[in-house]
Length: 506
Image 1 (cartoon, rainbow, N blue to C red):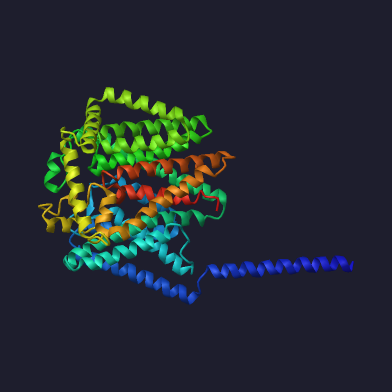
Image 2 (image 1 turned 30 degrees about the vertical axis):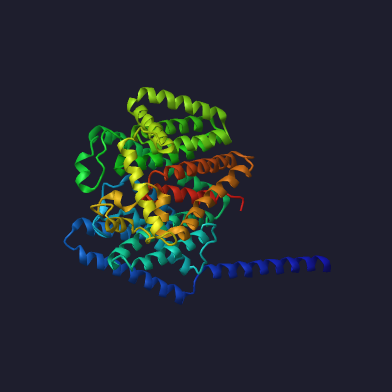
């Protein structure tokens, strides 16, 4: 009996100990009442000041008043369910360049810029309120180093730029930081789910929204081709006069082409590892729709990104896919003479550039080469720290490279990598490249090391392969277009990277 009594007492002591630990953990997750009230007051005071400030400035603009109220409502909703903020951000690229908020410069502000800023504010506020540290992430270090270099380069730019120009450029640096933070926030939201089952559900929901948004953007492009195929009338607003090319709501076939190539790579990787025939058929149908949209952009950089991405998948996983992709591409060119003409121009331009032949490249390639040469001149002038993040349009104007700094093409080079080199120098270029090297490294590890013992694991192994291939294609694409710094592409890229980080064996 004494033995039994001792066992009971021992069991009760363990239960009491667990209860005390559980209560202590619960208390650690909740701020004190005093701190909570102070933070809540600060939150509403800050929010109210923003609302009053914006409302005062645009009191006569009913549309903007409605917009401010909508933004405030969205903040309240996001506080209750932050995942919904990710969903909303993924759907905002459907608006594209059709509408900009009438503040933040002559060209206005993207709706997504404000929405993501709101999401980041709520996320940071909740971290402070719950007294939680910012999550550890492999992107933290290169992002912090790049940010430090970019800020220092902007401060140095005050020696040859106006304060207003440097200040305007700093807003774009803030934009880049918040877009990269989407990866960290997405990974954190998934991690905070109560169980592995809920984490899996959350990842699948985000993947579904990515796919739906891509389909809607492609469909919008098909509609645009029918009702507004000629962008000539938009030339006076700084846009290129593209004709009979799928530009969707982004008004640029090259950016749309790079985006579609990335999503196609992502879905192709998942398709190859899917063990459900019905899901495979559905994914193939979606990839086909996006592929048709990609062809109708007639974007050579988009084609090159897709070929690179599918080539990576073909070499690493499926030779059949590689051969099949080549056949499909060749057949599609026969049905689309303009696409064949664009590819031929690409080949001839490459030969002219590489071999230095007498045959001149086509007009578009000439403009791209001119842009590269101008940017290289700027790099030679300030190789270490550059001219300051996103100051390129002001520097180009000062150097006489452009007549008008307000045109869209003036704000960057026809290459993301050259743009970063010119604006942040070698010291900024290295951590910037490390951000993408990190993505390639994690995706390679998740694909190469992860064992697909179940349907769920197999799907995310394919997802990692898709990210690896898609990022490779996007990096190649960025050699010809400033795609790594394009807001709409960054939304999809960094959120998908955040999901990648939560598929690791951590």
